Length: 528
Ligand code: B1M
Image 1 (tube, rainbow, N blue to C red):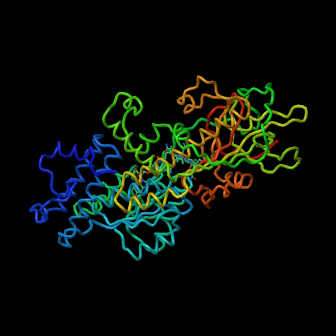
Image 2: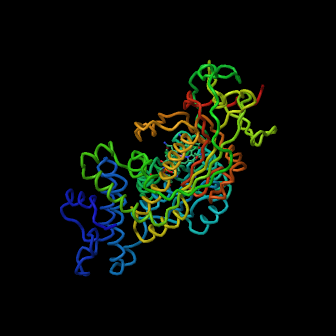
Image 3: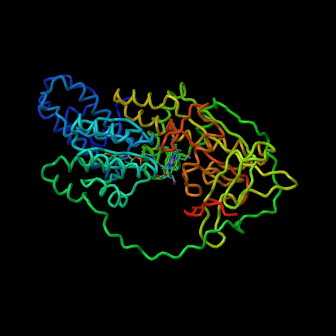
């Protein structure tokens, strides 16, 4: 990756006098007059990057590239600066909470904060409260940033906040994560801490909160507006009473279908050497949009040769070429005989009488509500139906490589490789599901487009534990018991997450009436 980037171009267009610290190459004359005001200049320029981002004029990838250019310039210039000039604006400890392996969001926050003048102590993933407390006592941070991917992790944030309070820590906490909300932060995490807890929906919000917290003129009001010692009284909107708990199969799901025979019942373990094939199963909206912040329709813009889309595509392509030398995609799957009993599914080895594993599922509490067990057909002439379980990963060695690139100031590459790995895991899940359909005897028609796969327009569906139809993540234990994914290097954490981060597990049904739905809680008890 070169340090030549479009965001600098943008900055030049908007700011005619580009300070020397923001040049791509070090100044020829190190005694350059503008060095005297260098820290103010680079902070002003990074603030400008933040302003442009908040105005939707820059995307995440460009912010990272701007940070790369700044880091390169500052590293060169540090030798000519007074120590006071390089002083940090404040210190932040960052950690992904106990049980959670989510790294990419936290690392993005680290890069943004560090390149805006903050001293960041990144404690990594799966950080238990006692380690965090020790680090707080050692580093005396101005703020603590907590990250996490799953709902379980938001609950772990409440526990962590309570432990920090018990240890007498007072520093404001910033929290972020895909399953977190402002409301949960105010009503659950903040009261457990008793001090300020700020919800940061993304890295730039985290930065602007930090800026307010270290600004003497804004600090008191920012702390006050984020301190909630008691959960605010919530006026509950009247809710429609739910239908009674039932284990009755929904009439939306047909039962008069023949059972397709399973192709094999042994466990299959396969490496997927053809990365290009797996990458063709990556949804561009997720890779370029959700992860790298591209705004608009990436595919359409790429076809129209939009410069931003083209540049992002080429930069990611360069990362792919480098990554192709070491990324390993591993898969593991197995078909099991399955029987439905109310809202539960029992899995058996071939002809077995005692279930190897039973999964209890939730049902929608409404007339004809759905439950995953509905998709298992009743045995006919002693022949049981089947389902498949799988685990895939693309995360081996990715964290280490991302860390090395981050340390070297190659920020775009560092985040891009993590995004590529997580989306490769998701793409591999899509790829393996296609293969399972083929093996099962219902291959996709040749006319199918990749977009049809992204919107699951095929025979049957796959569901992942933690998603709305089967939210109970503890069921991951059952997958581990049956498949032993440790054999492909995937471990289950105490938070029921898979390590490495870029991993996906799923349960595959063949039933043509499969739909995605949200199961209601509280009806998992087996009552038939
Ligand atoms: Co999955 N996943 N996923 N997933 N995934 C969610 C989180 C989920 C909400 C989807 C859903 O149900 N609709 C759901 C969780 C629900 C729950 O908890 N019950 C879910 C699930 C269940 C799972 C699995 C368990 C499914 C399975 O395989 N059984 C599995 C778990 C993976 C594991 O165990 N290793 C899984 C896997 C995956 C992929 C690997 C395919 C992929 C990558 C995950 C990843 O990012 N590590 C993925 C994705 C992409 C998602 C969604 C779609 C997007 C997550 C995301 O945006 N990541 C998500 C649903 C959604 O949000 N729409 C979903 C990008 C990242 C840059 O953003 O981490 O939010 P984020 O960080 C932001 C901010 O939060 C903020 O700044 C960051 C940068 O801007 N921030 C801070 C974060 N920390 C901060 C700290 C601060 C400040 C700001 O302090 C200063």
